[in-house]
Image (cartoon, rainbow, N blue to C red; front, side):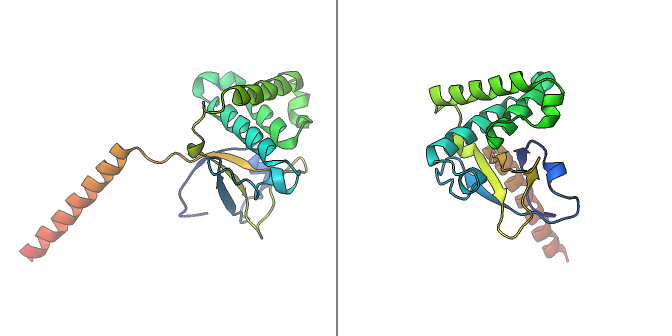
Length: 180
């Protein structure tokens, strides 16, 4: 939405799922909140709360692996995120590339990693973005999708720098008011 703050999100294929120019609204659900009832996994797939928490955490874990040094593996990582969301069958586009085995193995390893180290990922920095009521449902290969979004808040230093700039502008405007 124009004017809305940007966020980093991981989706199997958001661009193909939501038509260009059409409106799409999202509902953010913090992974730290534990209330995942509004997510596609629980609404459409009937996941239990524990299953939803584990799958979305695994997706967030995989999203942290989308770093420049892992670029050759991005297709497999994105495929594993899809695999976790779609509950199984690998997206035919990934299957055509012969990546089905790698994708399912990576998705299973991510789920095991999250189960073994539940506190390794700071859940307060992650949210599940689901389509808001009344907006176009995001479907990829006919499967409803959620986005896993990194919702990191700016560092305190950035906020201090912003505040200093605003105070300086305010002081200049104030002093110019005296000169007029």
